[in-house]
Length: 93
Image 1: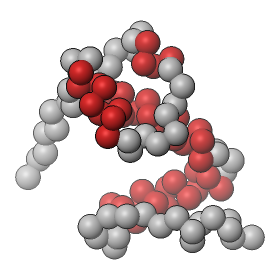
Image 2 (image 1 turned 60 degrees about the vertical axis):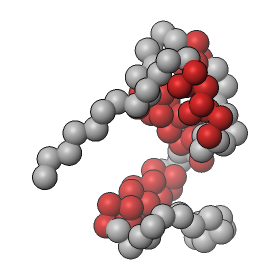
Image 3 (image 1 turned 180 degrees about the horizontal axis):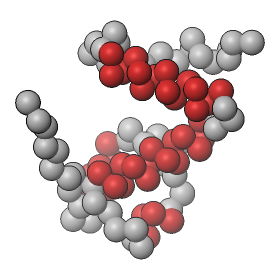
Image 4 (image 1 turned 90 degrees about the vertical axis):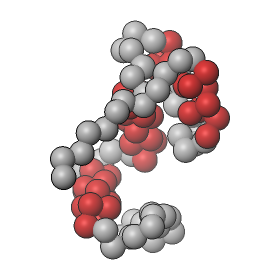
């Protein structure tokens, strides 16, 4: 049975046919089919966002409740106000 919400929320991106985005969506779908809830995925993504902003493992933000919307710009503002910044990304060309 197809998840009734699967077609309700489509990814928004500049190029939804980008192979990397398609692969990510396929992996997320598989994870969800194997029992991980969307709420758990959101909590994991929030922790990953804290990783990107170099928040230490023992920081109070790690123990705080996962925000309802992890794409809320106020979260990034708060991280920056607390002195955190994104890790530099290195790309091999």
